[in-house]
Length: 170
Image 1 (cartoon, one colour):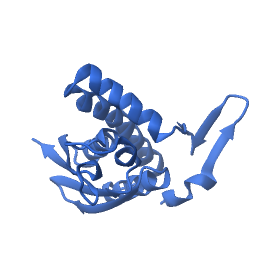
Image 2 (cartoon, one colour; image 1 turned 135 degrees about the vertical axis):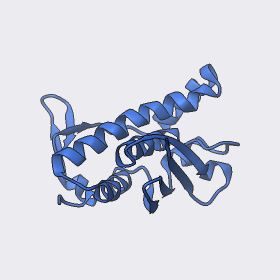
Image 3 (tube, one colour; image 1 turned 135 degrees about the horizontal axis):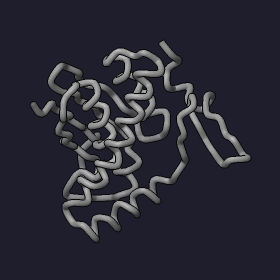
Image 4 (tube, one colour; image 1 turned 120 degrees about the vertical axis):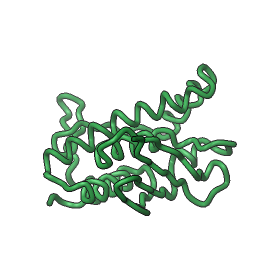
């Protein structure tokens, strides 16, 4: 088993010659949540309701790639990869991730202090599309099935936390 993700800051490597930041050989980048949320609001203006699907799909790709890379590279079990990815989400500043439940049929994760919800402001709908997508990518791998990813609660809607339910689609 590898080190817990809380040690990500200690394991980040910066290559100034190439302008590259990586974690255990996997490239990352730092970006302000305001930048992401302004992009999201612009996409929403252009695409309307389709925006959440498009943004979640981007998160899905990142979540899938990270889940597969960490699972293969470090030989993590499904339970370990879920714990690891929740730790990773917390350690990279996406809020405090907490696994609520993992079964063969679904994955439930709550996120306190989501920077996406904080920056977005008040909304009638959930706004953490990127997190929802990343968790769908994680769920697709560990549930070994296509999945549906739902943001049941969101701080932007007035809820106390953001809550994501990822269900198998058989």
